[in-house]
Image (cartoon, rainbow, N blue to C red; front, side):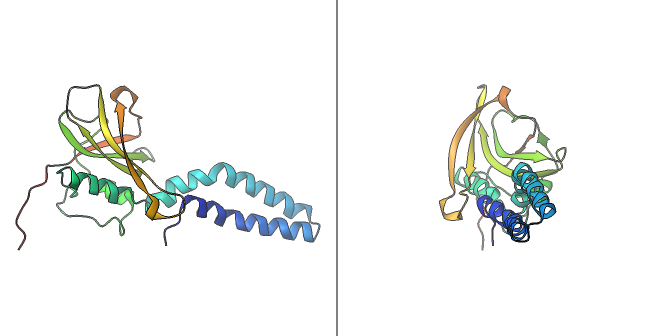
Length: 184
């Protein structure tokens, strides 16, 4: 089961509400104080916990990035020459399958994957497909939006990004054009 962001927040709030219920029922200020501290803590860090840990293991962004790559004639094979199933690998594992030719900026005349990294560039929780065809000061990329409730309502949107506006946590990996080998 994939846990979407809204479901995750509800799941982490349930224990807090149970503690509040018992604190009020038994008139226990210590339990009430603990539950309020827990709610405050989870309010500030719940989104980060989801983004950095849950999303890494459950993001479907590589599925969408690979689909965009194939649709535009590029091969989303990892650098060992195999295809990775996005259902079986976390985004960080897929990112680590591309150890070579990483760059902070896209190279002119290339297309590939744009990873969003954290943990000093060692992990990733999001990947998008990009194309940088010309000498422009911007490139195209396909951003993937995940519905907070269900996968059926996920969608892709083409966007532009100025080269000067690329965040420092983005890493670009060039993909090779797809070779149309005959499979027998």
